[in-house]
Length: 334
Ligand SMILES: NC(=O)c1ccc[n+]([C@@H]2O[C@H](COP(=O)([O-])OP(=O)(O)OC[C@H]3O[C@@H](n4cnc5c(N)ncnc54)[C@H](O)[C@@H]3O)[C@@H](O)[C@H]2O)c1
View 1: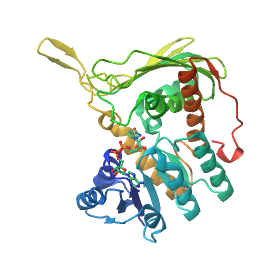
View 2 (view 1 turned 90 degrees about the vertical axis):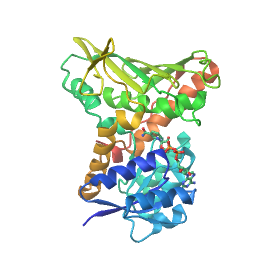
View 3 (view 1 turned 45 degrees about the vertical axis):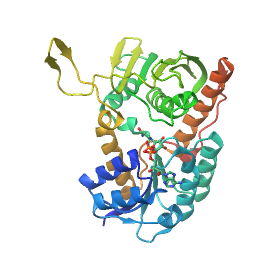
């Protein structure tokens, strides 16, 4: 029987998730949508052809026809909505970040442990990207020896309006905080942040450079440029004892045209990570069917948010900030 999905938030990401379900994910069906802007929900329901519009998020979560919930509303709504899903005993895939505060993430972790069942997956979709999977495999098998450094680049063509200088770190950079921790298989111990001067094209927000230090001493550099103009560009190069391994440009073809030789660059994250978003959905549905969790857990979401909080402190103070260790509860053992 199909898992019946209810979607909260019908903006850019909600519409993208709905399109993935509409294109066909075995064993899943979108049955209900909700948005603070009802017209958006109605437009998406009409496009999907299978979903009804529900007036508020509480009713959607409680709806007897909804088996599992997808949250793609703004960051501050995430923790309360995930807690409501846990109270209803329903699996939930929540867009990143899990909460807009570390305490919000901690509340989710504690509620999930108290409920005794893993129900939360956080939408860190890079974990499902074939390139990042290959990097992780390289670390896990020690094919190139132990990792020494990881260089990450995260550039948006023009970031959404809600991205301010702090959000460059906490909203965009949180992707790198999660994927770098996932690749290295260890938590971060310290973070330093250096801000670049703002682009004259976008004077209200700064590009950020983060230096993260892992518990074992691997150094991770993260450049986040919110308004790079030329396209959406995510790069990663892992430097190991015996060589390096990098993400290749995502398009499968190179173009020679009009005196240029190279790869096209995607306009935004939806095209760049299309395969990852789809795999994330497929594996989420699979995890509900089998009872084996997939992707980033609530604990992973909490760890990413703790790192983000420390990075924001480093940004405000201009100091290197030490991140205290926290022992992962057995409940979240892989
Ligand atoms: N995984 C990724 O790569 C990725 C990329 C972009 C955004 N995101 C995350 O996805 C979420 C949504 O981002 P977006 O770019 O789609 O934003 P958006 O502004 O395009 O869409 C958000 C939608 O939520 C609705 N909304 C606002 N408050 C609501 C509430 N209380 N209840 C229900 N609906 C409400 C808005 O009307 C809007 O339609 C954010 O948390 C963001 O951080 C993730």
